[in-house]
Image 1 (cartoon, one colour):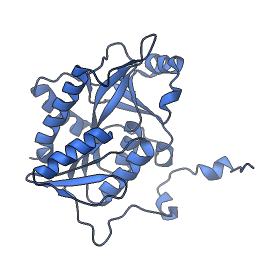
Image 2 (cartoon, rainbow, N blue to C red):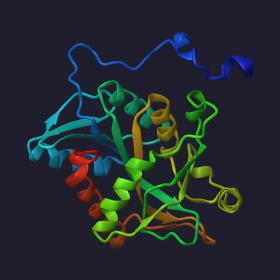
Image 3 (cartoon, rainbow, N blue to C red):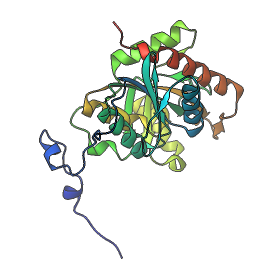
Image 4 (cartoon, one colour):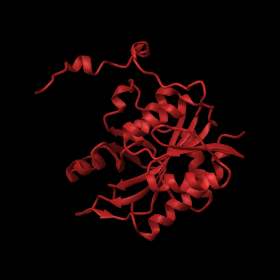
Length: 260
């Protein structure tokens, strides 16, 4: 049995009055505390578990987040949440964090390199986003969302001042990791200037722009997709060292980002 839905009905345009027709809105419940403005959203379960665990050991407080973990540090104030794999789950998490008061959010995740100048262990603070996922279309307006320039420049400075080289490539996000066709990836690199691929970044840029918050990302290259065959680097020493160094720096500065 199949069901058909008129495309014009299924994908209504996003307009200035669209919100009045939305059935469910993200909101803060009466017993939920407000979050600090600055926060970190971790994609991967291993990093989220390690990061949130260390924050709790240092005096951070766990809070309920139904689909993910959430810990709040007090001095200086910031939060970390995760894991949130894939655009739908990452957007669901970000929407709730925004409803709780988040205003500056940094994504920390991994990406696959599709440009030969990027190798396992390289750090990317993306300059542009390109959507290949299915979540953005329900938020996007005529504008092309991207990371916040001011927040991105602050992150680049923090990393660069601590001798971590930063790449500013375009990142394309997909829902279908196992359907990445090398011909398609070559076309994205040639025609759109895409350097890397992940699963969350473009959707989160779109939601951040829609909700009016500052958002950027730090992505570590975990595998290379630009050669004749896939070259994973998830267990390589350089990959582990680079992402851990970037995360340590981010946590050390997170509470102060945006201070005058």
